[in-house]
Image (cartoon, rainbow, N blue to C red; front, side):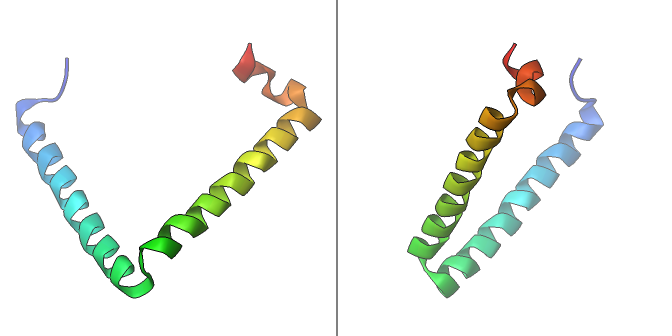
Length: 69
């Protein structure tokens, strides 16, 4: 099992390219907006989404019974 030998090269290359592009984009974003807003705004959105998820689970637990059983 696993990857075929010829596909290993392409998977390593695509992972490296993805990391390079993400690094360049993140450096530009940090230079533009600063670190603090890039941490706080997604954190606030995540907290709101988790609260909404908990509320929806409490409102309709039967919809999520396949996950918790």
